[in-house]
Length: 198
Image (cartoon, one colour):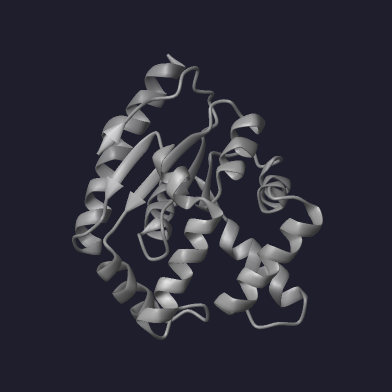
């Protein structure tokens, strides 16, 4: 794990989580929720808009929606939709599912204390976890999984991962990842923030 603290942390914390599909982003976000953070999922926002259009939230439909609205309203439209949902929240916030460099820039511009967390996991583990999760957009074959990764790479997720301030490896059990992430929250994050308030 590599931790680099942003400067001038405000009392309300504003974090983002990135990583390829199945890496453990949602698990990390849930850990932060237990410590008082409000989780906002960019994926959930996309799926909500796909359903509002009368379509099932499959991986294909979600990717088509993102491609369409980015062409029509700009490449950072998903980040803008997300910011509209969180800007009035009076709590610490974690955004789950940042995929493009422009999204990092949008959130950083909105709050200069924005902190980006990356979760790195092997392709084999990610595929197995996605299949086990069984969500509507889960890949049914290795080929579908690889295509989804290609789409993520085209969006710029590799560059986003490299921009992260904090990096976690997640190739063990869920229990092990939960333990290490919670340890960071308690020993590094919360203590750091409490010291900033003194």
